[in-house]
Image (cartoon, rainbow, N blue to C red; front, side, top):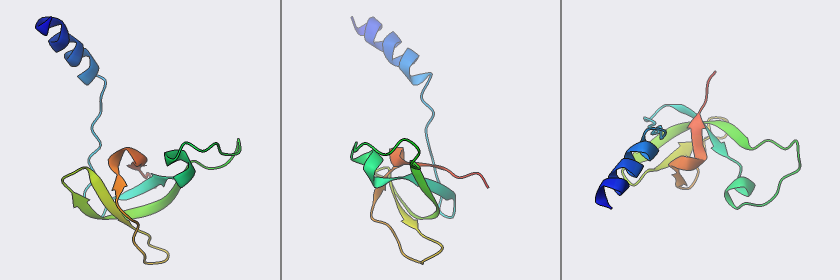
Length: 86
């Protein structure tokens, strides 16, 4: 049974791509309705931004800075953030 679980974990980990962002990276954050699993209109955007990563914490959450307004967001989990390509 232990061998089965080890092989299952190896197969799962093969497809996982870790997301690591550094301070100063440009990212998009998920719209709040997506995080809360509220249905959106069909053509509504699911991502907003770009934001700048201002703080990286070891518990896999980030503090983002809005460059237009100069405000920061609350802590946001890494799974609700993706890289912004300009």
